[in-house]
Image: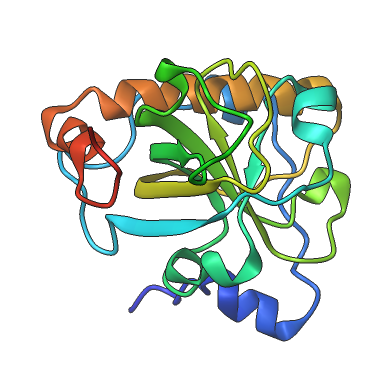
Length: 200
């Protein structure tokens, strides 16, 4: 019997309200693998994204200790049109506009590991599909309006709901660890110098 087709995020969005997400359980958290995906990215990966960073809900940094950069709706279709909702990993780079008077530090314009969520953030009951990227670096200032380029290389887990903010934070920390472990493989590391990025 053929497996049921998994709807893409864009297909779910076209229906209107998303279906309820499963609630994360302690047993699920304890059984999570520390490395995900095959030894090299497989279709539909790599997926290239780019857009100007927009203001989101401001919850990532304040509520969760995980500040995120939001891409505009039109920038996420290369991912949402081929992938399901959930958490992904890859690399990202912030590029300041020419003549910007809010310069970033040298280590802030490098290509850096990232994790991203694609979905509705069921714990917060979002009403529209969003893509939020957390770059694993402690930036000294915000970069709203700057260009963000990303290469999405793999899938970590499905979108989940949570019984508490603490449970959500615990899963986010695991997501970061899984992403870093998964990106250590040679066939993933080479995308840190992908032509999609602005390399000096």
